[in-house]
Length: 466
Image 1: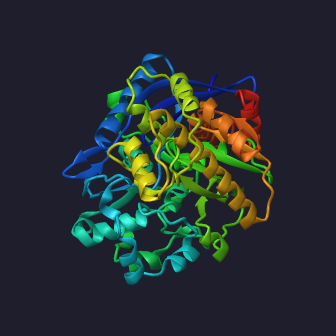
Image 2 (image 1 turned 90 degrees about the vertical axis):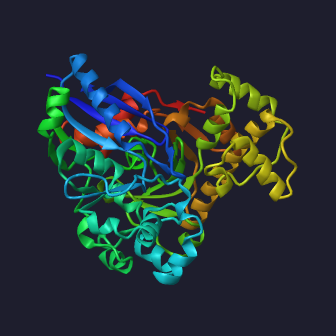
Image 3 (image 1 turned 180 degrees about the vertical axis):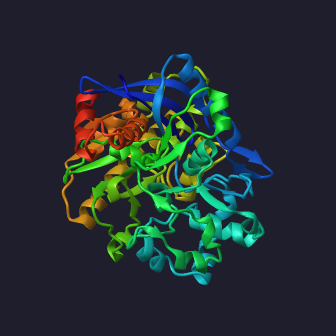
């Protein structure tokens, strides 16, 4: 009898429900349901429509039953750093703010003055400084609306909250928790001393569990809606952590590039590196599957290209964009694609013009040149990060394994190969969902371990080389 598993994989721009199973030593997948996801503006703040997200999940689960598929397990992965506060009746205590909201702008110096220095913080958790990390969001929230913490019973990252809605059980998954900057690298648990310094109640932080942990069965109310039941498990619930599970090329001379709304480029390590050198180069040590570390950098990624595409007619295809970028390839300047000006601009093309003006760079003369500048700047930033990895970790990188949606971007990937002068492997495309599914299959005993999972992925999916 076939054993079906469901991956709920939600990114910052879209979500999908994908069923997976093993047949004749091949992992097979089937997309059941897909939906869009984007922040909404409420009272001047960017928030997630968390109710709509959960309704989409229920619609997808009902569609699964309509197609005659009975799943045995389910796991959820999403983006990182964002969270909700929940009271003892399961209600939200405040809005589910997005990391692109402006509330953490310019808060870092106040944090360092009141709590601890950036380097002291880095030595505790090894996490790259990003102004929207959970720790800064909580710091601001406790400054502006401290009463919400009096009502809160649980602090849950987004995938943990979805699990809570499904099962009624509140618990936290390790890989996503590490992105909060509140998990200690020494004991791999919440840093309660730091939590105390922030003035936050300890009890809202739930016990940490690893991918494969069985949370429980569905609540009766959810079973009544979708018409069946299954085990809810934890995968590596930070989507990048699941994507890295599915990156088969993870040897000493390889880097992975998880290419989606964000680009995350790095290596897999068994030990965190919170050294001064790593700190000075702003690398992060995010928790991974089986207590491995993802030594990487977060880069603005396809978000920039996605927003430029929105400025074109809705019927503009990727092939048309590639041609437009090629037509603009006479523009040879690059920008710092990780600059905050590109994080949440009103109009992405204008952000490029504004950046160039502010930095005394000749501005692109038309949209095609802006588009090529975006592509070219991404490729050059990847090259810089790879060279930094080589320097900080004293390794030589020969291969880049691009996984995720960006592995299909032929123009960008050819440009990466040209700029970095390294061998490129592209795929699998649905790496995050596949990594999610593999964690479930390992937990169920169908796959022995992570290495066997990666071997199966090579056998099962088309991984192209450049």
